[in-house]
Image (tube, rainbow over all chains, first blue to last red; front, top):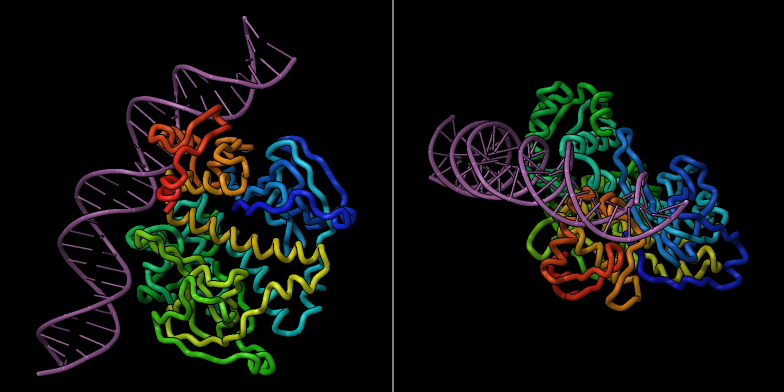
Length: 210
Length: 210
DNA sequence: CGTCTAGTTGAGCCCTGTCAATAGTAGTGG
DNA sequence: CCACTACTATTGACAGGGCTCAACTAGACG
């Protein structure tokens, strides 16, 4: 995701709040999992936000150029690494304490603000799934998402059609159907009906989803 | 993007601030482009957020279940439609005036808040691209993004490698390279070097990118 | 000039899309 | 209750877009 152009030279006052740091090409700015202590405003150069799968596949979620800000996490740790694409400089600000900000709002605003942050996280996760997983992996991950939120134990009732699932995963109905069949053949899931299914081997599903 | 489970029954006080509405399966809750007048909290049922391409391809960016909130736009209009997947109810709140909220913050917080919103929009756009475009369309859109922010007129200098572009677009280096070659063959772009290129036909690029 | 990395190009294969036929499921009305 | 319809889902055959593997070219740098 590339950002619309924004002023590359922030007000002097703003700049005073942070510390300028420089990075050589390919240099890591921060790594996935590291405590999310700062947000960074790019002054010049370019940054890539990337995450790596267990098998080595790499996914780039965004490029940031002068004027863009990154490192905005609600979680205690960064969800993706940031690396300089070329000679780059940025201003480091202490990461806002989201919890404080959220609690400073009234009930509804708090709720909305939390939803905004969550929505961004989910979209980044979705992009990662769409960018680097194959059909069966996508479906496995989708089913795990359903499982996580369902609270029905090992049973889930899907509210959506196969077409909906396909359009969510960037596949066709036929491929979704074939992947369901494959997961069933291999004993990972079972069907009560086409919409009601049992999770027979969650660990192996997790394994497939990467 | 599926959300983590959240309380389906908001405080009575919160509920009083909004208006409850019910929807039948397949019913449109709001349409792409419509004024973004409300944010919605799902009480029960399920909602899909979807957008349609000019040629009819459909993409679902998220499913929302009880406890999830959607319709959080910074822009005046909704960027995607929302439709009930099944029998659904939600509470409608007047959409926050993001400009007011942003301006109520001090300089840095304002900047950060704006970046959070923008980041979400960009991630949703990225997911849409990854989910429903083919290789050449992805590259065309990527180049248009570069063009939009470059301010170099019709010339752009790419800071990133072909591998970076591939990992951003969910492709391989080879495919990216072949698509570059194709765009050049067809007279849409020209090369000064492998990283410096000229836009020779932006309208046609836009056409390709959907 | 040699080495190393980035980028391009070609050949072949496989995964997924396309097209088509079939089967299950729900709703409707005689 | 069954026939009829409409929709959803599954399955098969086939084609094609993008991936894999491999060779080659072009710059960059010492």
